[in-house]
Image (tube, rainbow, N blue to C red; front, side, top):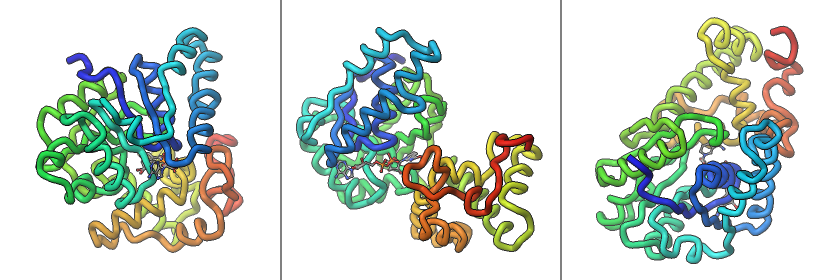
Length: 306
Ligand SMILES: NC(=O)c1ccc[n+]([C@@H]2O[C@H](COP(=O)([O-])OP(=O)(O)OC[C@H]3O[C@@H](n4cnc5c(N)ncnc54)[C@H](O)[C@@H]3O)[C@@H](O)[C@H]2O)c1
């Protein structure tokens, strides 16, 4: 089924919003984007242009021509108002900071500004879609769903399409069709804390943290065990460093609060690192003192012969 939309309104032009905008634009969709921070609109556009997965690098690697990159860039319009970004839109994708009240506020306004039947999708990683949508009327709730990309969205194939028990079937089908147009593989998930990939991925990270805290093995040896023994492309700590330890902490706090499952209680070592400014791999996370590897003075697998 061809994509039923040709324009997407993106709210939140941070790490994910900007990169998703790029993905859409290079796949031929027009995008209007809004962020509450004007500085973020500029740095988001910088990411689209010059980021590791941005347009300039794609041209340098011959994945697209200069003309295609210019065309993609010209399809992204940055706006200073949420209303202008959503006006006349059939598809709003929210990628603002992971905060329930902020997301609810965005959706309540987008439901008014966008077209009456517009799809209202959230890229949240750990908040449940039901909690975001619970204060809305049944008609609006039927249009709300999750469209959960993985970082970097230009590269990662998976999109979790999250439906609540009230999400209209047609809304799910349309989001899946959009995923297919972006050459992504949609996986349909019934709303639940952490959905599927983070629920399992964070469980592995939590177990790895428990082994580390008990002194059973080092960060590097745990990562190597999962790489070489289980065929993981990255161990749980390397991945945590890449995703960002502050994000990992927030994800675990949200999942613990939703489930009260001890498994998801944030590990002490993670809280300590984040409070000391170790926010992840400094190559990808600006302003970070380092991640697990810098904290323990170890080399990441792949940085030597490991
Ligand atoms: N970082 C990841 O690896 C990742 C992966 C998948 C999903 N997500 C989810 O994507 C969402 C965004 O995450 P991110 O990593 O891009 O965060 P980010 O901090 O880089 O970007 C969030 C943006 O939201 C903007 N914002 C805050 N309040 C706003 C408002 N009221 N209106 C408009 N913009 C507002 C901020 O200015 C910021 O630019 C979160 O829900 C997160 O859980 C993140």
